[in-house]
Image (cartoon, rainbow, N blue to C red):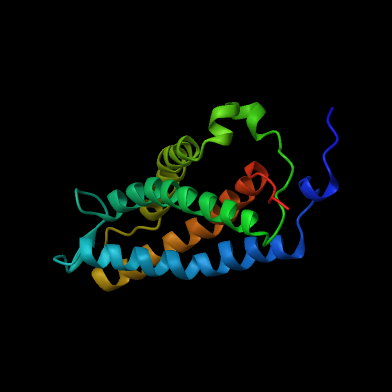
Length: 180
């Protein structure tokens, strides 16, 4: 076992700056960012519709399925790189490696793209069916475009408030400590 100077060792717990980063930057700010981006995407994609049906090629269900893949995939890529950058900048220390690698393999835990792809696939095949079933169970058959746009933004915000802090927390454990 090598002796690593204390200044180069990862922190043993979350510092106040790291908590702020998870809660404010990757939580609260992510709510607004995800709402706005997804609202604008839906407004562009569904512009010609006055009413958005629950099922069909351009529908609520298809949009939920796409969002459940692309939001976790893209957010994991962005948040993982951003978190590593913030650690290298010294905003907060890296956390010690955790057992994520044991369960998913060293490659998935250390490589951002495969990790992002895995979260996208999990979102599409685990979260999307539940979300679509919930909308179906509510009795909604279609939504006026304006209502759908609010739904789309709110759904993306809800997905992002869970996903973004999780991705940042994982990245905190995978990042190298900032050089001194």
